Amino acid sequence: MKKEYNVSVIGLEIDNGNLGCVALTLSFINILEQIGMKLGVTLSLTAVGYSDKKYECNDIVRKYEVIRVHPKQLSFWTKLKQNFKNADIIFDFTLGDSFSDIYGAGRYIKTNLLKEAAEKYNDRFILGPQTYGPYKSTWSQAWATKIIKRAFKVYSRDMQSANVLENMCSKHVSVVTDVAFGLPYKTKELEQNGKIKVAFNPSGLLWKGGYTGNNQFDLSIDYQEYCKNVISKLTSDSRYEVYLIPHVGGGSENGSENDYGVCKKLHELFPDSHVVGEINSPIDAKDYISAMDVLIAARMHATVAGVSTGCATIPVAYSRKFMGLYENIGYDYVLDVKTLDTESAVNQTLEWVLDYKKLQAAADSSQRHVQDKLQAFQEDLIDIFKAI
Image 1 (cartoon, rainbow, N blue to C red):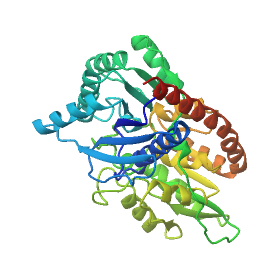
Image 2: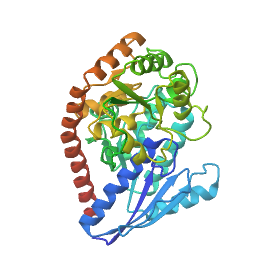
Image 3: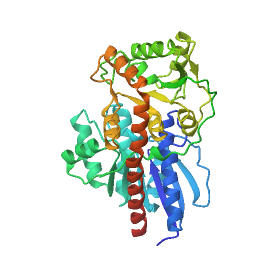
Image 4: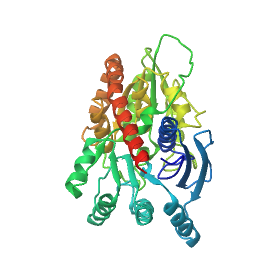
């Protein structure tokens, strides 16, 4: 067995306004470090991404290099080819949920070109635990099928995705779970005043109607009205203390992705709420979320932080990735805002908040499934590294 492995990762960002993307990266690096310690080997990591920021190296990860994505530059593709040829293994996570055309053709094409290059120059291309699909167009499904069939190993974080791939290309898929469940944290110390602490994470993307601005994700609710109605009810009830927590920043506060700008707007409407503004990493966010009794969130990795800390979590599900992920770990309290109307969604949310102890128990119970699946994933990767 080799003493040092060259590992390349695609679709994992160490510096991104979307803290969920960074949570995936830090969690997976943590898994690789555990594998390195168990095998007594070191790792040299290369990240193919959109930022020059580097991970802080240690005794296991001896080197962390970045190949900045520049699709229009020949030098980028030359450097990428050399790296992929020299890699012992390549992992691709596609930011967890972007191996799909629902976010637009541009993103889909760029991420798939990287996958194509990896498969062309390396026999050990592994698709990490992620959501697959939906694929709305014939060409996008055909391209995904080609990539998935050629992959050395395919992992999914939910059974729905595995079923999609089975129907598409009869590829064996190992169903585990989202690696971000394992992100470390330290509970934030907040003032205790006897009130039930409710965190509300609004999605800037849903607030603006998606990238297209015209209800891109086909919600059956008016998302802005949903947010306002829920927060209005909670802030007017003396039993609750409401915290507005962003999970995606970057760009301007009025940008299509930014949650913080929406938090500020909601605070202006409901001044009895608190805006949490000093979040610089997914671990910071998880520290805050772990101090809450209840979390209502539309950003999936905010909900992952909630469930994994035993918080009563209400995922506001705008795509099937939520349903698949939580069904896979036995957590049933997912709000489907592609079927419910606004009034029903508000009422269901408030009912679950009232019954939050039951949700906390369900979150705690789901952790047994999470730990088993993460352990299985790690043991599988250990066998793959041993075989290199």
